[in-house]
Length: 263
Image (cartoon, rainbow, N blue to C red):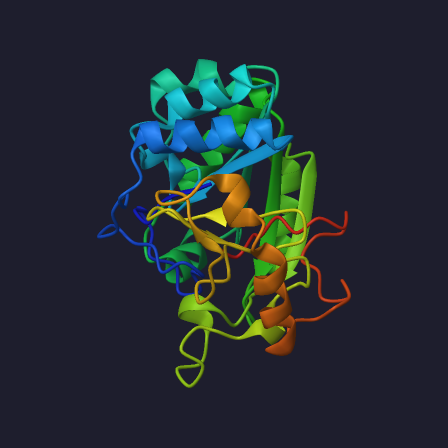
């Protein structure tokens, strides 16, 4: 669930184009709860709250609790710049985990990528999360020559992060060449729309967070089950546009595409 386009950072490679000027869209907290109800009826077992920056959404705590009430596994994918104090007990509950992206061990290089000097705060949040025993995974994104990619990985190890993945920047969103308009199916991992979907802040259901140019329908107009029934057709369109049909370009070593270069 892609809750919001609002984010404290303005990353040069953001796939969703999120920024401090972003909004929470037209989906209300009640809308999101209704979709969670429908997801549970469809035997969905895992939900990820992402953005933008989900910690900035005023309904996040309520939505995490609602998802847990349906026995859904919950992951909050955050930049970890800021966690409201009241959210820590909620994030510490069984069944909840955190995920984040990471770029460098040097604050100045990190700021050059994210547009904001936030690395010290992110490190403090990681230390608190690991100290509380909250499951946390991090992905180091390689944006190219000169980035302290390996040092960033070692920094995460030193911070006690137990699960560290790696990915290259995807030429989508802000990272896309201007000639593509942000749509480039060849840059996708191949898992889009295959047992997973992303719901945007306006209710549009898409096969992946990275896919901003195709939709299966809108949950503000139709039920989730009816919308996702159209997903195979959307996936076929992406394949026709050049999306890989194997997972050779996958962004996760465990075979599941949980995107990292979104912030």
